[in-house]
Image (cartoon, rainbow, N blue to C red; front, side, top):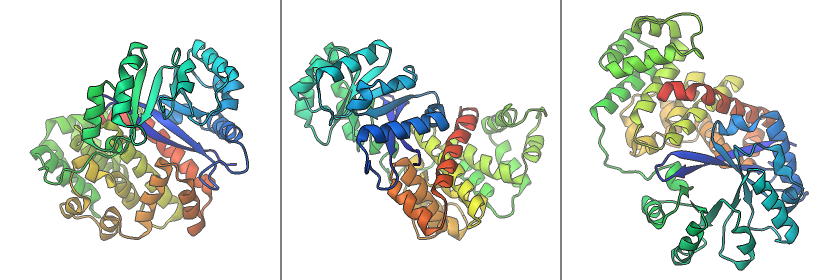
Length: 405
């Protein structure tokens, strides 16, 4: 049985990443076939936790993990670190004394307890004395009903999380109501503002990204662009001097840095640096997702030979550019003379590179049926695809902070 895992970001009121909700499924049908929810959850979490390690998926953040009644009663969450785990009780559990006592014991052991899709039913009353977080599906429960419950829940010291937040207006509405955390399409991919103009700094970044995407890389042109921006020069030198990248040589000049990196790495990290500078005002998770996509697509292209690895990296890196820059993708690609196959992939035209982006989106959304379909179509091993995703997460955990901070 494969270990399938996807993560959905959870943000605080400042649009800062607070945690990930981890989604575990059996890839055969994107659900739990043939076995009970408890058994499937136990198998998959065990294999993922023991083989991959939660830290490779969540970094330094919290993990919200769904549990059904038997896994809770049998204290299965005790295999996970309470400092990094929020136990999420599914709304479908059968509530009884044994379950309540088990959850209360887990709370005493230091775990945070969250109620998923809270529906205001009286059956949840025994949990309110020890739960830390309550999640409301704002598509299922009306604003009026939620608002009526907020004062009592806040008086108990319970944090509130709004799920399926799809617009800025909804975010502001529940923020004003007193909600602490938010999850949904709006935060994972902000609304497009179609007439937002580029700043001078963003235009410089676009010029730099253009050069990094050219078939014939010109060190002279890249050096000229970077030299115009002292802050950009500092960021590049800081990255090169990072022990993760350079363990022996002390880089003292921009020319030395560009020469030391080599063409292939320079293409990738110049594009990465440009993108991170262009999206400083957007949620950081968008950049993280872009980097994971870039490394995953690069690895997939390298293993199959179906496209150039640099093209794969660039397509993955730019695949969320419309959300990062808040402009339609079709308008953005016109500003960058990219290769035709890269342009078509970014504009959702059929082709291998576009399918690579769709595949990584399946991982992000835990759509394992799509992963299986992709593997079958291209005669690939599913376990290899999951390994590439794990490697991409690990790579981003290693290089993410030094590059963009």
